[in-house]
Length: 39
Image (cartoon, rainbow, N blue to C red; front, side, top):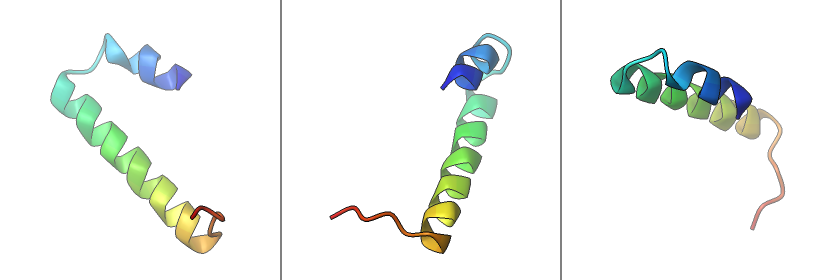
C-alpha cells in the first residue's frame, strides 16, 4: 500500500476514493480470471 501513502497528501478525498475503487475493481477482475481459494 506504498503508493496509497504517496497519493494521500496530493489527492482530494474524492479522487482518492475513486482511485481505490478502480484498484478494487482491478483486483476483483483479476480474482475472477484466476480465482483464489478463499472460503
